[in-house]
Every structure is written in C-alpha cells, then in structure tokens.
Length: 141
Image (cartoon, rainbow, N blue to C red; front, top):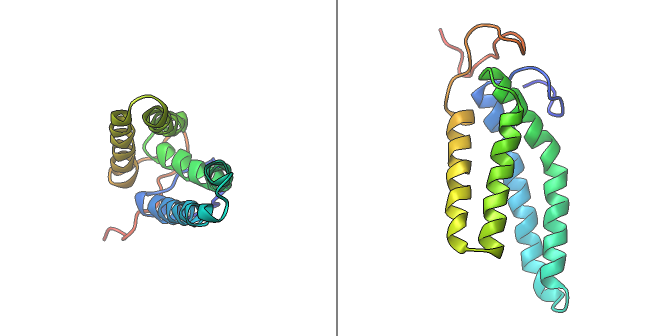
C-alpha cells in the first residue's frame, strides 16, 4: 500500500479503499462520540462538537488526502482534482447548513462521483508521469 502519508506515487483501487474507508469510519465514530457526549455540556455542546469534529477532520485529513492524491496519480490526473472534489463536497454541505438544506444533495453527488472515480475505475495500465502502474488486487492472472 505504500506510505500512508506520502503524496507521491500511485495506488490502486483496493489500496485506496483500504486507506479511506477506515479513516471515514474513525472520523464518523469520533463525531458520533462527541455528539453523544454533547448532552453533558448543555451550555457549549454544539460548539464543542464542532471544534472536536474539526480536530478529527484535521487528524484524518492528511492520510485521506495522500491516498486520494496517489489514486488520482494512478488515473493519470493531478492530485489537485481530489482537493477540488473534497472542497466541493465540504462547500455544499456547509451551504446546506447555513443557506438551503437541499444543497447537501449536490455535496452528496460530488462525493458519489468521487467514490466511483477513485474506488471503481481502473487506473492507467502503463507508466505515466507519476510512476509505474500500481498493483491491483486481486492480481490478474
């Protein structure tokens, strides 16, 4: 799977999913824990949940972005595509909170598109400017 914190090189679909799905799970459990404990802090509960979810995001963001960059590299794209998808999701979800709730659907569509692009579409089979092809799992015979 390579270095989880490096932004260089290429990884396949399996390695990408093995890196990002557990990170998403850890983050969701982290936020759920703080939502659960917010009842113990009635005067500052929502603010504390927001701060702690931001802390969880920053802890998970580096390996999440590194895996996304390397997966984009495997597809022959710049890693900045992944930043764009991530920022797009977050922007529409924030807009859903502060402007109109239906805008969350646009964030969800971007997230779904990212999942399909990164988790299900094969990378370029030949070496590209980011290095040799990543090994896929299961190995093709």
